[in-house]
Length: 243
View 1: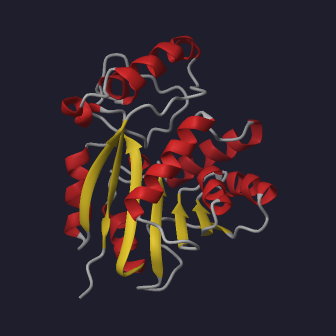
View 2: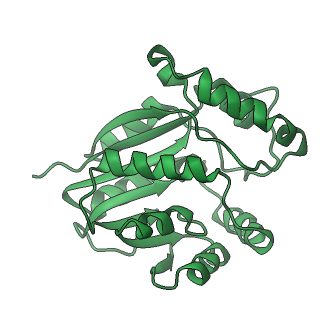
């Protein structure tokens, strides 16, 4: 199965017409940025490529911390929101499976809640490996299918699956599968699991009423180390070894 890119673009272009695509609370956004900085061990002024940047929420937060950022997304309308908010950031409309960058040219790549939109992420992983310089680093973050809430609400095999607010391409990821994908293209990958990323918005009206309950359980129940594999988000990160 391949990603239906036309449906993906149509969905997010339509979303951009009605709202800013910013589903997390400010606290959660800052926690994501802190995790990215830590896993990548970013140096001051580092040059970053933010894949799947959408309207540039994370690109802008990273720019505000002094990093040199480029945002890339399929949706021209979401990119338009980013350009309007921060004209100083270059935003590029392009496909993550055919990146418009030279081989061995990028220091850091971020995949912003992107891989769960790709039924087959192998081509994207190959492109990340290609454009990264030797010793270049990457990090991706996505909803974790091992988390019971993510599985029940967003996985197509769940009896409680809701398609409201998502494209047919989306499915929470399995951490070990992503590790295998990145390792197979020559990257050294690891997993890091994060809880407490509270949502400010979900599309389903019924689920929206339960959002405070979800946010409470997410920040409290999975804190124990032995439950870390079941936290709601997995950060897949690593390095391109020098040859």
